[in-house]
Length: 122
Ligand SMILES: [Mg+2]
Image (cartoon, rainbow, N blue to C red; front, side, top):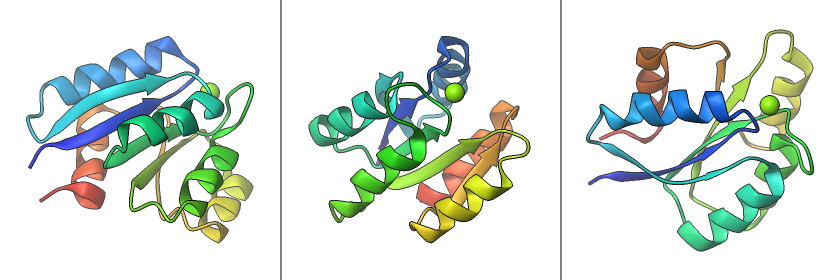
């Protein structure tokens, strides 16, 4: 079954790279994109994606706060946190709220696909 992906990042360039990587993969379909955590929570409600690629540092509402709100709803959605170098403390916080998967930027298309396959493939 095709997995629905919500792409969340305040950088249009990163969103474009992720969409391009996933367009070459038939198991994943990007159903929406958001540029901050508030939009991410709203689109999660609307689209119920299987997976969210979630940037950490964003305006309005950051990735961790958005993830917390989404997970607090008892969501089965898998979250892949996209962190930057030096985000070790953030990753610790992420794991304390139940986010188990992260990928450090910059990443290559195949690393993204590998990570998504691992958490949501099959
Ligand atoms: Mg960012």
